[in-house]
Length: 108
Picture (tube, rainbow, N blue to C red):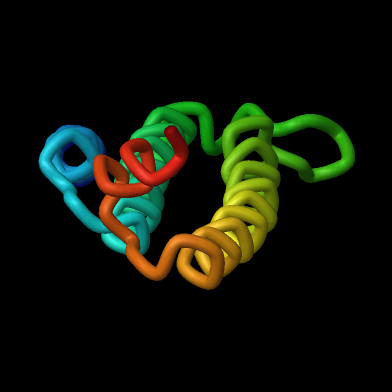
């Protein structure tokens, strides 16, 4: 069980770091949104892995706190992604590009 938890933590950390690096290096708003979701999935995986050690200490209703937070985070992440992609579509329609540096220059 500990080995599985360690593997999940390592994978979650790797996904989180890869997502942050991709956000920093991306020159496209759609790729930036995808990288943000990779980082969120890494954080969710790490949160889920932390809940594995407390699997048998759930509340009387059968809800585990970590699992509940993961589901809530997935739902909020989906809503954020939908709003973000809607904003990206509006930016593309207005400026004709998805490069953030060009959008900043066109704004002035």
